[in-house]
Amino acid sequence: MNAPAARSWAGRLVPRSLRARLVLLILGAVLVAQATTFLAIEHYRRNVLENVTPDLMATTIRTLRASIAQIDESERAAFVAQASQGEWRLVSRPIPPARDPGPGRTLQCHARRAERI
Image: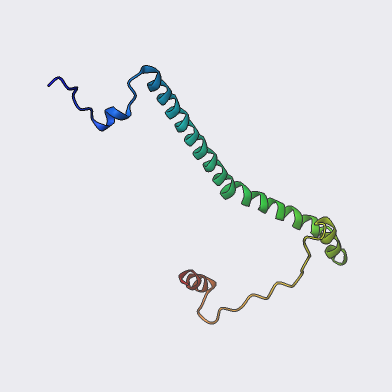
């Protein structure tokens, strides 16, 4: 019984030559580097979308509101249409008066009820 000992399944998958093992190791390292790069870029993109974009939008809205406040009311709608190249239109309406919450009720009571909904 001089038959070679049966190799395990892992032993059959790993190449015997040093060159083939080196190629397999380099291929694995490249795949790990690609996966790490992909995850880092995805994390950065998600971070930008969640944090930077809303801040930029808020700053832009504040700037636009301050610019529009400097223009006469009669010219505001035309200014917005011209500045946005026809993409936006200005809709002005008065702010509704504050409602009286009723006797013994406060606005915090309404806010708590709205949070539960």
